[in-house]
Length: 277
Image (cartoon, rainbow, N blue to C red):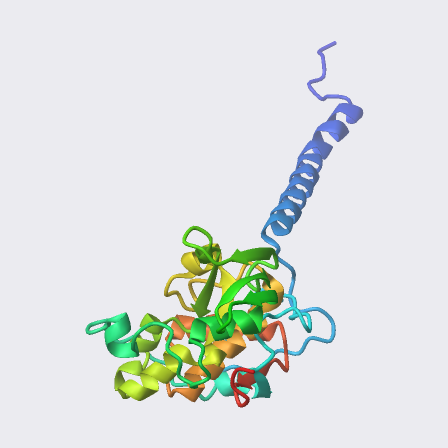
């Protein structure tokens, strides 16, 4: 009797299940890899419950939310007053490309570093150190000799000691860098207005030297504070400065600001109505 070429049903059944099993394993591995990548990159499906998107012209999609600022943790806000909604103010700023940097010279167009613009007997650097540091010690005039900074860009504590080798550990940052201001409208300001911008407490913040060096003249599209809880205030103050001095924002800068503000609906804008105390 000739042998049948047909295999037993049990063998055929096992083979027919193999493609399905392989597919299930592949899908499981793909889901696992996706979850791991999402965890590493900090990707979430979208805004959490109760978060309403802030309408900002030109922004159609948003990244994962960034934590809102914690009240009282932002350095340098003691003389800065909240005034309205930052997203609304952003919507009023012109959006266009940066002008050439031609003609920019720090002291030539913005005046000598750290003037006493408010005639209180102290230069601007010492005014800001006295405002933003705690446990300060000053000399018989108003020079800050030592103090402690809760660095807003990192959240770390930095001890300040005046001295050739130590003073640079705490620096004064222009939130809107002066070269950025020059390329986004400050060329059209007169000298007195540019000096005011360079010494405006709203645009100044004591920071750790490392962060200030990393930032350079970057805008919100190229640099944001490592401490995410400070990003909303940081961007809101940049917007407030640009609005106060009639400056514009570059397209990428505008979009980056909008993405940050999306994470903190109702974030206020600021003014410096009270000056430095």
